[in-house]
Each structure stands twice: as structure tokens, then as C-alpha cells.
Image (tube, rainbow, N blue to C red; front, side, top):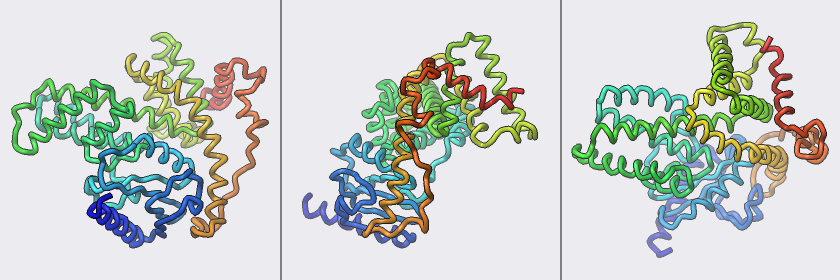
Length: 385
């Protein structure tokens, strides 16, 4: 770094440290690799901020140029394996925000974004071009930022054009989606300077289609990724049945889910007693997937085929590292304990545990789909009565 950039970098690190400390964080700088609460290889963060059982590992960069975002994504995923910890990238080109990075996510939920999209879609249908374009642009930007967080790409505070380029380069946007997003960004810039001649109804409708498509895809994937291990196993069995069913059978399965959701919304006491929060979450996820168009369902099928085995591996790894993280933090000579007492996790026998053994040579698991269906039927026997 030149002297000028070194000064800017030092000032940013110092400023961030002071701001986090003012918010009650215990801040550490200049840590060596062996002083970190968990192993990150040779990586040395610029800051670590700790508060109320949570920790932030922070990297500071002067510029977005020449960033190896894929490397930072690997770091973000590694940090996220440790409960309560998150990796953050902060640059001098980040968008202005009221809150400090990592303290408060000011983004709407996926459900809120879908509700906002419904309103924007009505504007498109009514051919209120400029209002629809502005609303859709805001929803699109928020969706990009949320997607970056969900898949551990630490760029959620980048300017929108940086978001678009990096999400495209990392495979989150197709080339046609990227081209349309760039075209809309250019029109948005012109609008901001008072020009409107490039804004037309076909462009707005294309943006409307793009935002709707991405919201549906990213919300469903996020909701599936949030299922518990038991919920994921049940969803796997349900999806295996739904995916091979004909149209009549799919409609029947969809109607059953709709009836359950309706009963819950109307306060069906018997059903409410039989189901817990995780069951309700599973019903909603299955219903959302059942409503996907054939094209969206095919895309989801491809994603889920890759996600499912990896999710199990990550869950096992997370269970193992959770206790190791708590122990390493409370025993650390450098860091203060994050909690008064670390909760004890049950011992996990990764070799002999029956559930983990689904990948071993067990006769009852020769047909894994049949086994999953058995799990689901057992779990839902009461609510099916």
C-alpha cells in the first residue's frame, strides 16, 4: 500500500474499533493466527469484536478492486460453522448505513420482500412504469444483499453494481439475468439524473419477471436451508414423492398442505397441539415448493440434489465444532469468555450413530427413499389421522 492508502486503512480500522467498543463490544486487533478462537489457517483478521456470546471476524479493504471474493467466501463459511460467529468484509466503498456492520440487519425478510413485490407487480400490470421500476429496483437490490448473506458471500454492503458483478461471477446470476440487471442499473442512473427516455414498459416487465423469479428461487432455497435435521429428512421424503407424482397426485398433495395451513390460520386447536414450530415451518416450505412452476421446480430439483448431501455433512461438522469452539474460547488466554457457562452437547459417535449410519452398509437403508418415507409417516402419523 502507498502511504496514503495505508493512512486510510489505519484510520478505518481504528474508527471501526472505536465504534464497536462504544457499542459494548470487546475489540481485539493485531491478532496472530494462534491467538484466534478457532483455526483459520494462516488468515489474520483486522479486527475481532465480541459481545453477548457472539463474535465478528472483520476484514478491512480500501477498495473493491482485485478482491478475491471466492477466497473470502470460504473464510465466511468456515467462520459461520462456529455458533454465534460471522465473517464481515468492510471496504471504504461500502454503502452508507445507519448501523455498524454485523450489528443490525436492516434488510426486509424474504416474506416481506415477496409482499413488496406483489405491490410492485400491480404497478407493472397497471402500466405505472416509473413507480413500478423504482419499487422493483429497491426490491431487487435488497434481494441481492440478502442472497449474499444467505450464501456467505461477504459483499452485502457493496454498491449495487459491485453486488451484481460479483454475484454473477460466483454463479448466483445467469448471463441473461446479469445483462438485464446491468441494463436496468444504467437506466436507474439516468433516472437519478432526470432522464426517462430509456424507460419503457417492456424493460419494466422484464425486470418484474426477473425479480419475481429470483425471489421465488432464493426464498425457497433459504427456507429449506433453515430446516432442522429432522425437518430436512421429512422434506426429502415428501419431495421424493411429490417430484415423481403426476399432476393429479401433485394437486392432491398441494391441497392437503393448503388445508393444513388453513387450519393453522383458523386456530385449529387439535392441529396446533399436534404440531410444533418446526412442523409448521415444514408445512409452509413444502407448500411453497408445491406451487413452483415446472421450470422453477426443475431448477429447485437441481439445487436440492446438490444441497441435500452437503447439508448433512455440514450439520455433522457443525455439531462437532460447536463444543470445540466453546471450549477453545473459554480456555483462550487472549479472549474473554463469551458466556458464563458453555452448554454441554451430547456425545456424538460419528461411526456408530444410527442416523449417521445411513451411509453405511445397513439392510434397512438399502432403499434410502423408502426409509425416509418411513420416518415421515412415523413423524406425521398423528396429524394424518
